[in-house]
Image 1 (cartoon, rainbow, N blue to C red):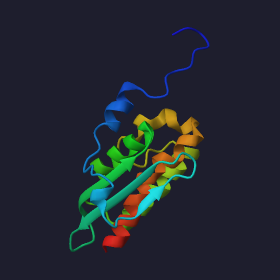
Image 2: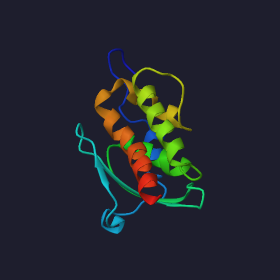
Image 3: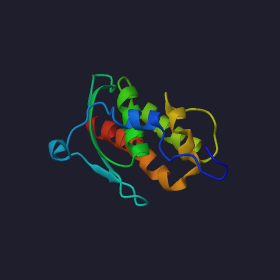
Image 4: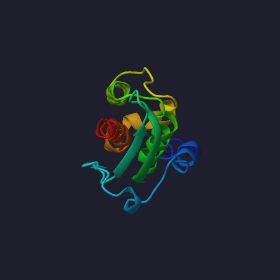
Length: 142
């Protein structure tokens, strides 16, 4: 790449991840599930989970309308949410917020694939949406 030309916003890996959202549904199929929106970019996510008797996620459905970073984050959430409790989801959400701003400790499996988004503050809201939706969906399902 020539000097002075910036790297592409979305890598092939990010686009592949964004295209692999587990439990993807349409917003119409999500019924009364709460919809989360990013004020900075307009992305939106709705999520619904089922829990076992111990309050752990057994399945997840989500509707996602976001940039590739937000879609990739939703794919990561969908791939890693089964087995989590609301407390673990809260820890993950707080960890992702720290990771986006200052902490290099990866708080969620695969999040390192979104590393280049850390410098793009305008994308942080889209990345956080699926984690916020997961926390809320578990809390609602309890």
